[in-house]
Length: 306
Image (spheres, rainbow, N blue to C red):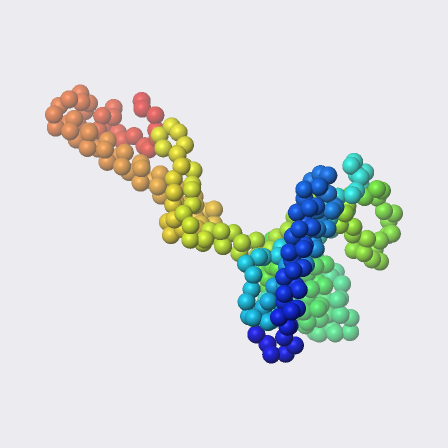
């Protein structure tokens, strides 16, 4: 709690009253809504969120206390207002990277420049003997120009670690257009005309989503899982401690193969025991060289009987 410009008790009380009034207006808008996308409900929601956030800040500044309410961030797109049947579309992509290993980035750029003499010099005037495209490996700025000029963005995304990059957030928007733009029309300002109200769909990738999933997995509560027993499905309850997280699908395949191998070994052991009993008792009628298999051979796992 800071001693500078602390709000008065009257200001905190006024903020609390504003929250109460906003609650009443929100409920009134919900009760009178005309449909799922009633703008009056959206407006009342935003007013309530703003009032609650203001009260929470004043409460903390004055008393070092907080409310139990979490105000959701306004990161959603507005309602779609584009054409029902778009005749053209625009795909907007943003991918963020951190330059985690500059030396690896420089080395990869220099390798590309050395192998391809036609790579344009990203920094004319900085040519060094033995370097392909001038200063391709001399600065991060030059190296980025070489790599992104040589490789498609999707390839860089799939191989970012090789280039010394670390992935940040990324997003892809598909926006509807009335007509396809004329060649070169928007090249001087490619992102200025992006209209959120014309976005048909969007796809976001962020580490924050993984953290939210981890919070759900580690909530300390038992989880209900669906499994099988016999010929039908069954529900079971497991705790977080009993859940094994598999980061790689190959690891999951290895676990399945190990379980299948154990099952087959058990079947082989049972078959071997049965064959030994048959030979000892003379019940088999098969040659003593094999466990119930003609010609004294041994059937492979899963092979059909002859």
